[in-house]
Length: 224
Image (cartoon, rainbow, N blue to C red):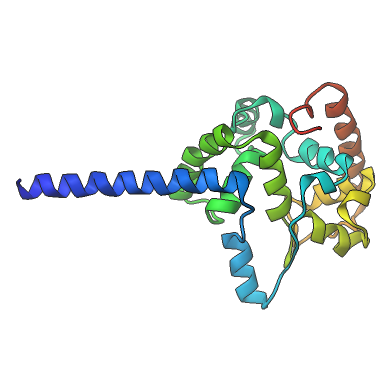
């Protein structure tokens, strides 16, 4: 075999090995809770420790779950990982608004790293449909709720509920859930327990939005 042939063969083996490891990782985390993420790991190194405790989605107040979906990805139940309507709106708006779905954010948090590099975006575009195909919507949301950052060193809705409101996540009120939802875009600069007026108004709209997605069926894929 020529040198070019050997290089090509080893390259294909490498590609197949990466694909196999990727598929195993996607299937594994459908059933096994991710022990950490790149962000949690890096913040643990920076801060010395973080506040995080995994909680089943069954132990989170349904109104809080709906609030986060309504705020972050109201069409969560209707897309396959990418909300094309939201992407078009973001493009029409000159890229001033985000269009990442909860599925994309979960993939980024669990498998990738923060940042806006083309390599990360490409990996996210490959992994998101795989996760959507392998995980039920409820599992995607459960993982997201447990790895999302809610304050410096505070990860997951269980830690956030205690950190801000001194209650377990199943005791969150609709407004408390909306307050948590409203800080997600900028958790280190926002305090769910002490929101400025403009964010309080946003939280009230999220409460209404959560009720709307329950009424019109857009919460059906993750409601029991």
